[in-house]
Amino acid sequence: MDLPSSWDALRKQARKLEAQLDEQMNSYRKLVSAKASTKVATAVNDLESGLDQLLKQLQQVNSQMQAWVSSGGSEMVSHTLTRHQEILQDLTQEFHRLRSSLRAKQQHASLLEDFREFDRARLELEDGVGSAEQAFLREQASISRSTGQMDNVVSQAQETLGALVLQRSTFGGINSKLSNVSSRLPTVNHIVNAIKRKKSMDATILSLVASMCTFLIFIYWLTK
Image (tube, rainbow, N blue to C red; front, side, top):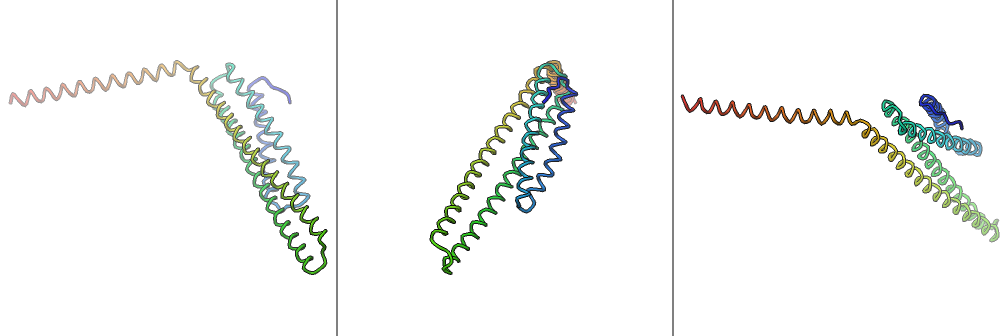
């Protein structure tokens, strides 16, 4: 992927990737809700691969935008950078949520199929049609599928951990950017402190005037 150097080029590339992710995420969401089939499974795998690649590209562009701001870019673009980082985080979380939901749906369907196969094997044995060897082979197949389901659970846990690490990295980048902005705005900090001192002085003068008025009223009352 080309590495543009200007801010405008980076923003244009980020918006293009975000639009592609939105479009593919909508398609992925529909497939997750669709009834499971071999055709759907193939389309899901293709979409997941494409979404994962686009998210990595958008993460790279965001990192370049962060480096551009940190190396002396205008502070006016800081809000734009934050918005692009938030969009990346939302898209990443949505992708992991949908993928986890799909994996759970697939596991549920697989478990139901295992139960149906177990019932068929039991009925065959009861009717004298099946054999001990057939039952053993079916049991082996069931155990193999269960092992695959456990592997899927472990894979989901690893994906969730990866999402949490990404969120931590994103928030860390935002905090670093805010600290950088604060360090570059000493004039604003000076103005804020001056306003605070002015408000404190006004409050002191007002208190003195109120005390003097109270004292004069008290003297007037004594001389009546």
